[in-house]
Image 1 (cartoon, rainbow, N blue to C red):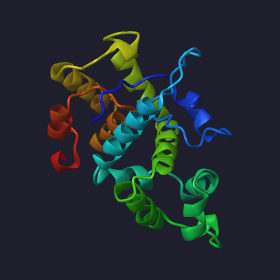
Image 2 (image 1 turned 90 degrees about the horizontal axis):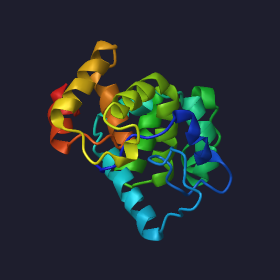
Image 3 (image 1 turned 90 degrees about the vertical axis):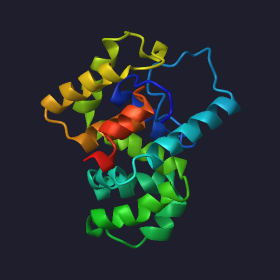
Image 4 (image 1 turned 45 degrees about the vertical axis):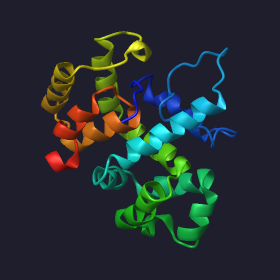
Length: 202
């Protein structure tokens, strides 16, 4: 898991689909930006690597993530951010005729095998929008440690356990919490995630 905090508001991730921003990794940068700071190539490359690791660590929960999203919405935005993928798999299909199974068949290899950053960014955005309540609840829990979540280097396992229990009591399922933690870089230890949230623990 990448060591980067959950930050910002889900609705601030709109920049992902803004013209000229399709190639940037906003999955973990949806907070207010410092206008004086520009990411270096090294920083951007590190963010890309972290994003790939996070998505590939979802394993079977990636299926859950993809199936939770509307195929028509995915096709609409895939056409904008990854036109080659759209042309290869979706051109000529009516969006309302494309099912969730087809989405998993197309998008999972694009992530797990090809490491397609644009697809990961898009799914991160769509997931956080769809799961806005979970996103905000997690953010609020993280803020109990430090209002400036970017300063948080690590969330201790006992505190992570407390957060997961809180979210579970609110009705969120293991897979939902796991996805939220992975795609937003919540600073739980990898050992805690594997022991408590990974699909093998379901």
